[in-house]
Image 1 (tube, rainbow, N blue to C red):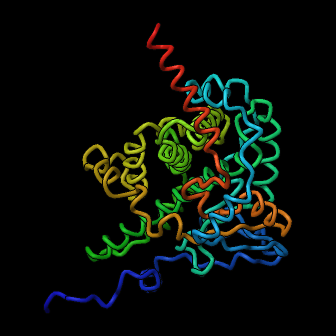
Image 2: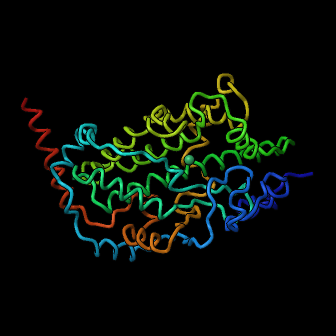
Image 3: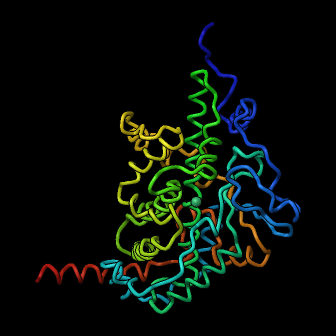
Length: 369
Ligand SMILES: [Zn+2]
């Protein structure tokens, strides 16, 4: 038989999903919109939350350039934050947030990732829980408003970026497991790698000091994604992000098991964490010591470029009461752009130049000393 020029199975998600189905690599269970009495039933893996009856589900769509411009126009300039505070915070974010203290809630209490290995496939994606997010946002704003670092709407933008990116890491893990399932099948050994890994993660437990490691890495991924966004010059965005990162890092120790270990996987250490996670996905304890899984982790998966669906394209929903959904859409008018690029619905140029001048002044002062 000759090698194929054009494979019958294409790269489309539909083809992938049918293949996973044919190979019995999916987990069947009831749909999300379950009746009240079914809600407490034991379901297979990876179904952390169920959308209760009467809750709304709103798909989040990308905005056009014209819509984004219109959003920027209608928002006033930031006026509740202090330019002086922000420029000081940019220099020393740790001191700026020293007095901020709050009860920390992990991202998975505010959102969840529904895997596509759990059919039906039209329900997979990221679900942001509107009521829970709003309640937590109110509380965080109350705890931090006197520090004049984040405005009411800015804080919600930061939270949504962080929560989404945490959940997106779960998609990276599922994508990784799927590529390994394809590879295993290519060697004649189709195997439910994702299902098996989730079963070990949730039911049997995995012997790792940071178990569940996936949660530590998901927290770290969200933190690292913020660093990536703030790598540009001094200004409102950088100062805002740096202080927010400091405050989330400070509160990680109060998170549940696994989640609280995120600090081990920031500043480039996520590569080693990814190698350890690959061991767990493959079910090969200690394998990263004899097989260069760290090379896979750095260059192939799970990293930000290996997702089956890129951030703007992954199906994402706001769910909850109509009131909460509308309120979030009002405060964060470009949701997709916010969780992918931290789009600000405001013109920050005047505060940017204020911070820039202050930074320059500090720099000159240090030179004179
Ligand atoms: Zn999580």
